[in-house]
Length: 374
Ligand SMILES: [Ca+2]
Image (cartoon, rainbow, N blue to C red; front, side, top):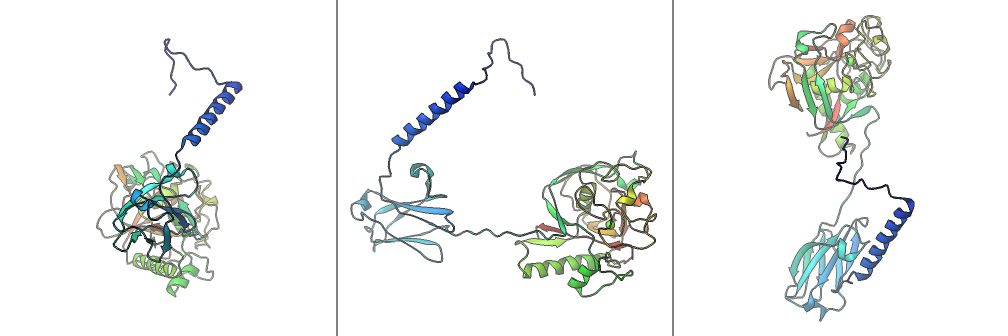
């Protein structure tokens, strides 16, 4: 917002180079003065840094200790993360402090951890949170990070070929990002996890797997999770699963509000650049990734094979929802995106269809999501 000065306020002039230099110099002088005035630590202290120097501990001894133990007898660390200090005056009091760094001014960087009393042998033991590690995980190259965000789910009544179950439009907030498969799950991937290929159309392991019931798709996700966890390739608590219907549409729209992520395309003249569907498929599915990706780098969301979602099929709620999971119960599950068999209108981002979870079709496959929470 633009703010105007009132006639009683005088805008400050821009600082000239000369003025800036003067100001910086003045601050530097103040800092030098402060540094000279900082008191030195008066107690005895010992500091150690371990675990990649990310944490240091100081043991600051009170006056009663200073008279006996001029040099602290420190300090051994054992595997359970204990700080041990010996040869102290029994009953004397010690303040244990911690710092995230051993650099910088001592007087500003230490925080209280505990106040302890030396036992009858002159020993104190303090459990310290000393050991950390950072474990990095690389996302599989066949997955795309989808950031948290908001979008409007469903289509406006003005959309060409709109169907009634695409409304009421609902504003969805997804509070957590997730990885989504860049491609539909291929027959080769399915074979490597399940040991079987149920597909009707075969001959290329990069074809999308089809003829999989919803239960088989979710079982694939569970078994893939076990395999990847066993191999140490998943962070704790992360799991593969089907996308929710909201996640699927969010990823399909990829930040757009149009009929397709690339635009409205009411005559479907550009769809063939992005999707295998009735007009260009030759009545067969095609190896994944053969067309252009959408704006977030995901392939074949429109067309090739319909994709199972985790939700029961149900009516949209309208209004605002957060991290929706769909109805709590139902009969059919949701499938999205259309297929090589369908007309262009059934490849729109908003199109929905319902299929009983035990049914199998050669136009129906799935893609996976990798996310925390299970
Ligand atoms: Ca698809």
